[in-house]
Length: 371
Image (cartoon, rainbow, N blue to C red; front, side):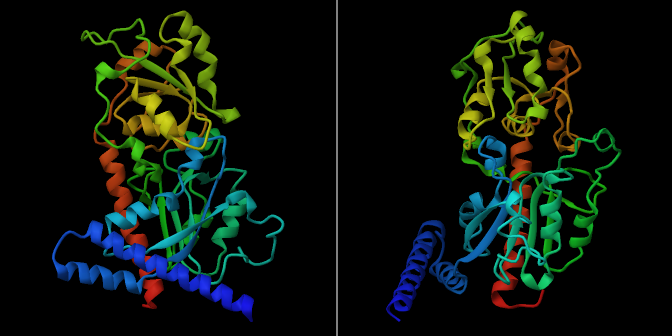
């Protein structure tokens, strides 16, 4: 009994702390009338934190994987949409743990409590051999087991047929699971004719991408022996990848250094768990050449020209803001490469819109309203 009382006391303290924190957030974020503050307070009192299980690829050698989990940005989304937000605690789950000991079972994801929401993503989890079995396991989750959200998941097939296909080749299980009333699907692959909503990688919300951007006079690095014809030298940086099958750009480094297109100091890897130093590196250059998906994505959000060496996965085939594919002539590619100055705003607005729908889905669950 004493142990049980101790557990109960800890839960009560945690509950009290959450309420206090919620009230503080209200006082900071709702600077309107007393009536609005009262409404926000009432809403949060009814919405005490729930636990959400976020299944994604937790690869500590790849900053893109590590920074693409929606629950990492949940608190910021709640602050932005305080009246509709669903306060939650995130429980990260490595996708490779599903379907394997000690979790192997005939039932789908049996160790996630009944009724608990599950968010899958982000990252290239679709049509990849390493993730096919766990993704099927998740898709088999019974509707009664709780809400299921696929957030910013993307294609990642190495098949040449899938890479050059006329439209995205999406797995059948995703089409089937999307028919359920308590499932939301958002794919980072953009196709206007697709049945699935475009939802970019949630890492677009990372604070390191926030404007204002550093002005050109503060850039540092080596100017390449190249001029765009308008009297403005375009600085070229390279981001290599820790993915062995996706690091084709590194093979060109020696040649480009020899031709003075860039220096060895103009190169960085996407290794690590924090995207901030990578984004800081990308800001220094006008053009980024890479074989990494997230390097291309983040560079685009920063307004850079992007050149991808070898489209080795279908993840590059359906980017809403497509990079320039390396033709064999880097200087010519720099000239024809495009910038997308509105990309960051577009991606963030799409993410906010999807988050509102996720909040609505989970809100219906927490209030017991019919789906």
